[in-house]
Length: 112
Length: 115
Image 1 (cartoon, rainbow over the protein chains, first blue to last red):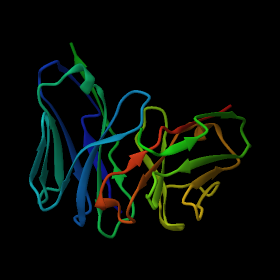
Image 2 (image 1 turned 90 degrees about the horizontal axis):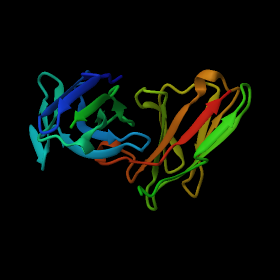
Image 3 (image 1 turned 90 degrees about the vertical axis):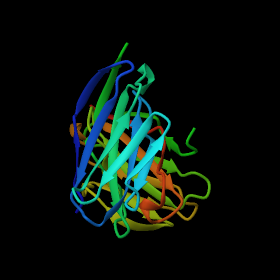
Image 4 (image 1 turned 45 degrees about the vertical axis):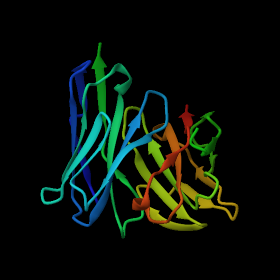
């Protein structure tokens, strides 16, 4: 089955700096890669996703890149703000799979 | 508000007991997923139902079972509870059976504490 690894497990950045979180997946059939943000004590919420026919997607200060050959994808957050502090989960799924496989998560702290 | 309702929000029980967690998906969503999140851990997939039928099973213990009813709400039953079962249990719903057709909408979770 699919296995998703995520690095780093924790990340601290100064407010205004950029943050990058990287994920790798094992199943070459995976073709959908969402990112979820979970604030402390809250439910996970989708922030951005990318499909395998696209190499990059942007939404304001966040972007995701996908390298299908290397089987890895990354989340980029620019101009970080304190409200970006949260745990971020990447995930992967495929057409034949019936579940998302989530990475272990990255705890991002944005220091003022 | 995601539109997914989970009850109870908090539950404290003793080892060996049995509990039932309930999830009502968003209106119109046919898929229900259950995830377990232990303290500072990731989201462990337990099981996926679509329109009343089991679609996929993850690392779900034999002591756990689930079902989705004709009105599409789902219940997760946890029996012979152990201390290690203490966790936050999330339910998520989506419209389609195929998870990569779009967003999963998570409920607020049910926090289970086993003493």
